[in-house]
Length: 216
Image (cartoon, rainbow, N blue to C red; front, side):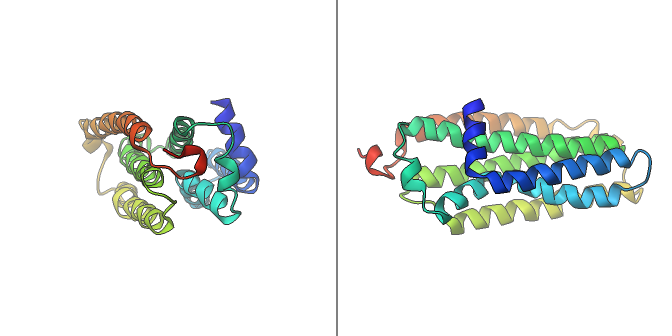
């Protein structure tokens, strides 16, 4: 785990600096909200940071392609199974970070029940990122158009699937009791976990060659 984090940090120093800065600012605003109402500013910075977290893997791949260092990375003494494991780890870690940060906001603004529908958002985000990983290893190159479509779909789902529910609650049109009986988010999360384990095994067996080091 530590190796993966060091690897991502070395590659994305500038991006990580922005992410850490926005995360700290968001946490500071949430804490400040206990003394001075500032949840609007907190949610604004949180939304930016949240999007940064859930698209972290995409940024990781775009940096590799932008600076044309993929060939250098993939000739390191690693086999394809290690790269698949590392990619999956980065996706899961970044999405867990996004969930924890947004949950901290929900606790600080007395919207704890919204942590349940937030699971939908994280599940969709992880699923989209895993599909991006899959196309990367099942094809001969990283498809940026495919990545863009999936990421935009995730963000659109966030805007039309999660935010309206929170807005309805803030306006007093629904209450938290409507979420107390649902198990669907947890079922989806369980299915997603099984899917990640399956795709990990599938890619290890069927990943196509991307570089000479991986030639069949």
